[in-house]
Length: 297
Image (cartoon, rainbow, N blue to C red):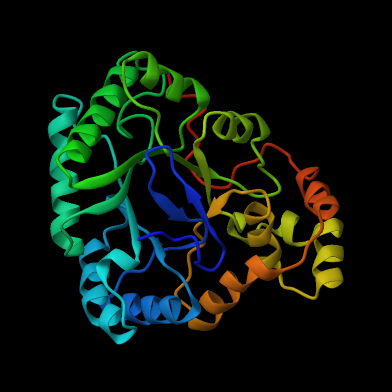
């Protein structure tokens, strides 16, 4: 379905599909009851995008929760957008490993198609960043996703934690451009060159770790505190309106119903472009997650 009217708006991907800009991250949602509670609150608050990953080990719980919660809110599978991530884990058979992961995700999530699948990281986590075969692995993994897309099992193909050089290599190897690149993003890590590269190439830059794990240095920054007071909002809403007002997607995680509802209301904060730029000037090039692919060959 078109997602143009969802809270927070949507983005038209390179392949023509639409994706909501604001979604619910599900990392650390582990039990079935947590998933039901979180999805119930999310649907009630206007969320339609849900982000998971094979690495999160919660796809079965999310699939079971969707069976319960979707009908409660009068929604169908086509009314929501499900994205997951597959990681390169078998360098001796990259394509087969990726295909098996996606098939397993389809089964556990209880759906016959996935809206978006991302390659979680630009290499097999078990090998060296400097391994020369990392490029070959990425190309084979992306090719496997393209084959699954042609088969109708996934609608869109993207990447996560990729640098511009990694994306350029995919195109040089004969692949289509990924439609999404999900990377860490917050005022301490604004990645201006990568964000601009993605915008120039029509790729949606989607933010993960937007709250920077509530870094003490960011929470206590004088500019952050001033803007929280100016707009009468909390730290979370300020961090979430920051990407949204720049056309960047965001998938904050939460299992707390009140926090889930408050997070998506950040899209309505009337922050000025001048104050967005003040936050951009806090950039330190500092990442707080372990997923930083800039050293990967």
